[in-house]
Image (cartoon, rainbow, N blue to C red; front, side):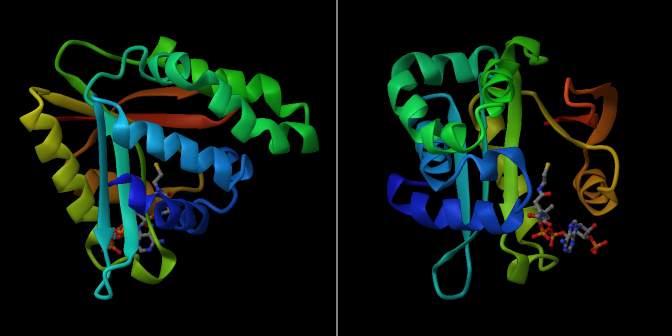
Length: 193
Ligand SMILES: CC(C)(COP(=O)(O)OP(=O)(O)OC[C@H]1O[C@@H](n2cnc3c(N)ncnc32)[C@H](O)[C@@H]1OP(=O)(O)O)[C@@H](O)C(=O)NCCC(=O)NCCS
């Protein structure tokens, strides 16, 4: 993923995660988020292209999860604040949740050789054609190239059978289950690489 891809990545994110919290923060916030991941030295950010060379999928995370968002925020807090402003004005109640999301690496299971896969999506018209699997494989290879030996991710436990099957087919195993402050039951997956 390069800064020039961001507009298409944001479009793909909004298509693949239509009802998720981050999507609700709007394109400016998402653009800021993916730009920060792809320009951070520890960021791992990949795109998959369709036959016309357009972004059809993406995978984003970090080879250094502990304090990842705190590091991004420290550098760009004003830009993130400005990007989330329209959504906060629309619904001030989201501030607590937003701070929770940005703080979440405090809870990150991290270690010296751990990478985190934070976001992966493929455009609806490209799903089920192997692109997601390729993005996972590339992400793991990139993480290994950066010296990581294990990768984790989290996903919803309920009403999410396809995605859970997708991760299991790609070699991930559930190691922990937890419930978020919003009451979402989550699976935490790991894979050795
Ligand atoms: C999960 C996701 C990235 C998989 O990408 P993909 O390009 O469809 O992946 P692949 O083609 O390599 O694998 C397809 C497998 O994923 C699973 N899957 C999950 N959601 C699917 C969907 N909407 N369409 C097709 N397959 C889906 C199925 O198990 C399928 O396996 P099958 O062969 O048994 O049908 C993609 O479906 C997606 O973007 N979903 C919405 C966003 C999301 O939930 N991301 C993960 C959040 S943690």
